Image 1 (cartoon, chains in turn green, cyan):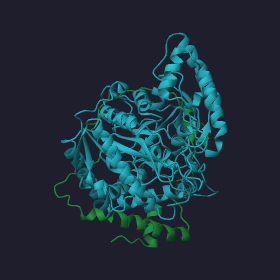
Image 2 (cartoon, one colour; image 1 turned 90 degrees about the horizontal axis):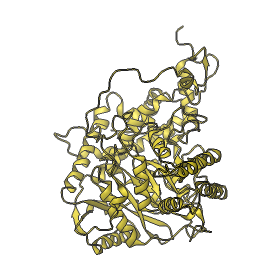
Image 3 (tube, chains in turn green, blue; image 1 turned 30 degrees about the vertical axis):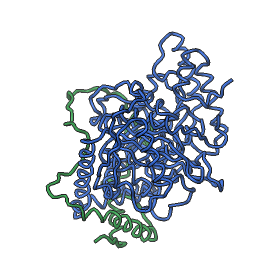
Image 4 (cartoon, rainbow over the protein chains, first blue to last red; image 1 turned 90 degrees about the vertical axis):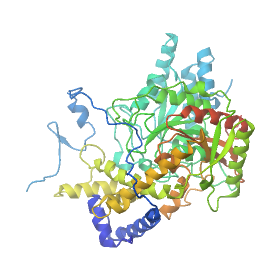
Amino acid sequence: MSSLDKETVRRIAYLSRINVSEEGLSELAGDLTRILDFVEELQEVDVEGCEPLTSVADLTLPLRKDEVTDGNIQQKVLSNAPMTDAGCFVVPKVVE
Amino acid sequence: MTDLTKLTLADARDGLAKGDYTSVELTEAHLKSMDAHRNLNAYITETPEKAMEMAKASDAKRAKGEAGKMEGLPIAVKDLFCTEGVQTTAASHILEGFKPEYESTVTTNLFGNGAVMLGKANLDEFAMGSSNTSSYYGNVVNPWKDKSGKDLVPGGSSGGSAAAVAANMALAATGTDTGGSIRQPASYCGIVGLKPTYGRCSRWGIVAFASSLDQAGPMTKTVRDAAIMLGSMAGHDAKDSTSAPIGVPDFEAALTGDIRGMKIGIPKEYRVDGMPEEISKLWDDGVAMLRDAGAEVVDVTLPHTKYALGTYYIVAPAEASSNLARYDGLRYGQRVMDEGDSLDDMYMKSRAAGFGKEVQRRIMIGTYVLSAGYYDAYYNKALKVRRRIYQDFEGAFGQVDAILTPTAPSAAFAIGDNEGDPVKMYLNDVFTVPASLAGLPGLSVPTGLSSEGLPLGLQLIGKPFDEETVLRVGGVLESAANFTAKPAGQEG
């Protein structure tokens, strides 16, 4: 069920937003197929009536008051940005 | 004068209290040791100036009678914990130069209790690995050598933390563990490593890998040291919604040395095909030690053990693919773009240049198992098997107080081994991953040497939030095993 071809890997790489070269795609197809083969054995486990376990933390998510607890830290928020201008993050043009 | 770097955390704490030496002296001794062992590449960033400042402040605090639980004790911090104003890389190129504007809760707790930071320890990139060979900042070398003398891995992902403690370049270190990243390197480097119960330590400010599994814990020279340090790291934190709203017990008080009448489970499924004779013997010896100390040894069954690795290698990459989506080249980290590039181009170039091979593989596996058409077959299925694994432990803990297993299927291997095939590397985590999936505390204690003279550890797994039992049994195991071997040059 799980042999990945180059086109599938190209699609996954795009969904992951990672640039992969043509030869990289072939290598990844091999690696990812190997990993998927490895996890294939889960298919044999009987999980009838079994609820998915998303977290072992035995709690309902706590609610807190909806209030402002910090702010006025524009410099801190921007301090690690690769590119800023006039107190904003700079992104490539997204609207033609 | 005693070599201050060879002290345990507990001894150093008591010596400081008695006034035998100052934090400045302790810290200087460790900075010197870091200079002498730079070939091990255990630290990504050394912070000697900050360390000396913190040590001086600590001595002043002590003089005023305000000593905390970790007062004046110099430690290494895995470079996965955000430290205010100090570069935090997660061993990735994509975070090179990133200086957090905030401090993680765990380091805030430690520093609040007086601990001194020596530097940021190396690790596998984004904590993904079992050998510390995926760090952008180079491999860490295990201070232990086998008979051939070649360079060995320290284990991973907390390899720098483990090597720093084993080579006396820190009294102790913080680690994080997602599938074995504290316990396996502890075993490979002959030290103690404790992964607490999920929720015991806050994850706030720790660079996220797989959020339902990640947990911070201590890596130390002794079980007592682990108890002391965990007490300083743990506690409820409103900033982490999965942090358990419960008090922190006095873990050190749990080390009574008395395990008479306790029930210790031995899961038969861990005796895997092809288990090396020396691992099998190590385990049998450990069983005998606990029995001699008055514990009752009980066979238990964890029938879904063989599916734990497969479950882990779906769940962890799935969570990683979501967590690592934040590295977009916009708000922090590396940005790669050329004139006229679109937003997508920038994302794709930045992430291709910023992430290493293993991280890319895991993001893509995670993306695949979460994608339309495969979600139920892989991800949802894995979550259901995860519940089966959890239920196995629930069943076993109906009969026993703790479970004893080997920590890893082998001793440390040579740098470069197990590289070509990602799956082969994953097999190193076969004994540590099940407790991670169930969120249970796991402690690795060094108890023997391999035929090559390398350290081997045994793992104790406990009930949720019962680190005290794990530490108590671990303390007994430690005394009985009397593991005194040290890497060459660190004896005495």
